[in-house]
Length: 200
Image (cartoon, rainbow, N blue to C red; front, side, top):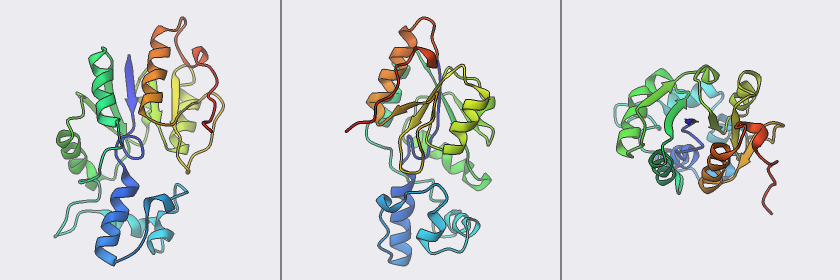
């Protein structure tokens, strides 16, 4: 199957990355656990707007963009290799500012992400996949509107909420299980998946 995988908040730990750089540059005490909303980064970081946040996050003379040196989440890269070995195609589907494109490709190479197909686009739903994994509340809604016949997975984060028709995954082991279920189900698709139960 074709697995449409988001990067930031799913494979790459964006919040740990930018808060570490912010602490180094400003001496702040912001921790990634304090990021609880999708667009709350500017206020948390002391900027007046998200435009200012992204201007700070972009490449500087003395450092690359904040996307360059993010750490992968535990189990992410290993799980992608495991899925690739079992015959699935890893399709990276991510949204990035133009200035982050080069650093994104460098990051994928640095971490050996097993893909030959990368889409950097705002219109993620246009990329045809059998299973989608994302953490953006807005992109998950787009997938539901345009790809409801596919398996759509929400990587559970504080900034997204459950959605009918979307399967919750809490870690990479969960996602590997979902892919196995969809692969073996007849018919395949989100209707073959049991409702997700939040962990206690």
